[in-house]
Amino acid sequence: MSTLLCKHCAGNIEAEDSSCPHCGIPLPPHHATQKQRHFVLWFVALVLFCFFMMVWLPPDWSPFTGR
Image (cartoon, rainbow, N blue to C red; front, side, top):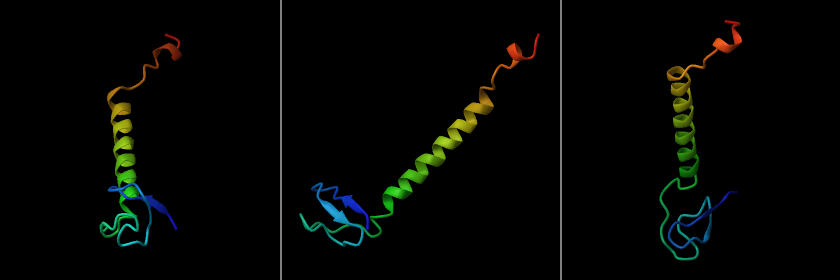
């Protein structure tokens, strides 16, 4: 079971809860997977950015070629 924080009162909530036990505010459906989805989106964006930078700014290998 994962413990999350309520965005309204910052109280601890469980992934299965449908409302916050501290303040009573209803929680959105699938609130436990929202953090993981945001992480995956940021990770994909970071990988794409790194790939773009590697293509756009290739390393200068001339010091290692003996010229």
